[in-house]
Image 1 (cartoon, one colour):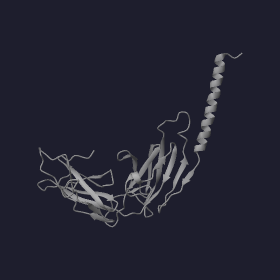
Image 2: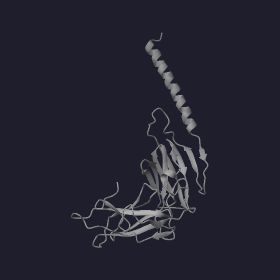
Image 3: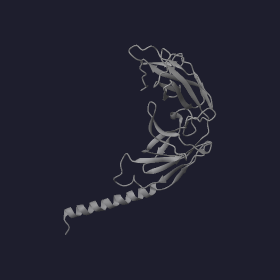
Image 4: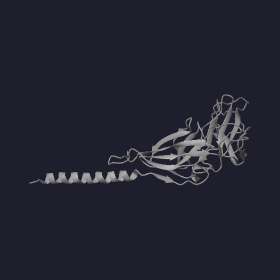
Length: 272
């Protein structure tokens, strides 16, 4: 006659089998394919594909990852050298992961499952051939106004984007108080509606190139000099000079002159 311990063991085995069957059914259900309709002029396909069911089973981790992949094109042609970042909205739009595009415009990002903003930054290009950065879906302003992309644990999301909007660049020079080129100075440029600035360093000749940017007339550029921000034309935030960025053009002459060091040298402090 079975003992109480035998009965307990039998019950546990049956419970394990029931849970395994329920998990198998759940994993099978997750293996479906869906396609989301897209709005706007972009030829975009958003498709959830079954993976190796890594997120299924009782041993699945809470931080299981999803994969985002696709192809970036410019006016229908593969775009190499672009940067694809996924961001989360905190105070600003902080980058959580990213990938560069290859010769065929392809990219792949593996991240923890969740919802993210997706930003594509094309190469800087040159006058007459400059593309604007792009937030999915069809937003060229800031990440908080873009559409979220959701990565599902154990699944691959395919997102193809065609860039069509022309952008512009900002260039200038940073010199010391005595007119000598300053290398390694960090210059920030952004629009007032943005909480994130585009930062770039000056080269050995004191020159910088920032962008690409979406065409608009309300950009500002600044750097930190002796711990204090100075804006284009050596102004403060209150009386700063707006900078206009035009499509397929370079806005030049955005120059800065650092003040005489209060100590032994001038310190350019990056923005935190």
